[in-house]
Amino acid sequence: MANCPKCNAKLKLTDWRPECPKCGVNMVYYGMEERLLADAEKAEAEHAKFQKGLDRFKASSIGGGRQIARLVLSIIPAIGLVLGFLLPALSLATINLSNIPYYGDNVINVNMVTVVEFFMNYFDVNGLLGVIGSDVVGTSFILFAVSIVLLALSIVLGIVNFGRNFCSSKASSCKKNIIVSVLSMVLIIAAGIVFDVFGSNINAIFPTFIEANLGIGVFVTAALHIPVIVVNATMVKNPIVVKYTELPTYGEAEEEAPAEEAVAAE
Image (cartoon, rainbow, N blue to C red; front, side, top):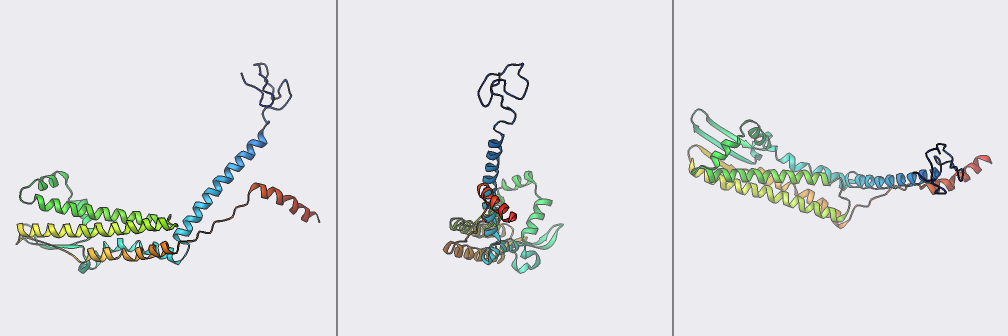
């Protein structure tokens, strides 16, 4: 059985009226003002928390020239991955195919466009496992696969670093951005080194058919991370100042209301 919220009297099944039979209080509306005030205070606290997060978001991304520069510069390394598509001289690598039966001669400028096209058109798990298991070219294609994985990890870290720009207002967060950028640089250089070893192996196996060489684009793309590191380093030394929006409380609003009414009455 239910109890009266005010006097705690036990209610019977026949007590269907909204008033308590003992103290006469309206049980439906009893304590409603306190509940509404509690809900208002909770909403105010949630709004204040959201506003602080929004202020930090604005300060981290578009709160100043350094933040905007960091946002733009963090995109540029991704552009370096596709520069080889527009400028073959800046390709990540080149693969020269010569005198291959039924295929002829061809030069493949390796960049993100050609890598994506390869996976979309020619990627075959069973065929890849068969090639890796080969005694002749197995080691070479394992090196090739490792270089692709390292390149993919570098790209993932680049995306993570770009996303961190929207929540990196503290010096500690900017330090983490530097670490992510450095790791992305190391991974893409490591991918280039592994690919160079792959090239040496595959060139030795098929000296007249395949020639794989590392391109300058790997080092250009790695170097494009340096400006982002420099900007984050300036933010570590001179942290971003977040200007938080001052929100009025309900108590202040209630205190100001009578004064405003008095001015209006005068």
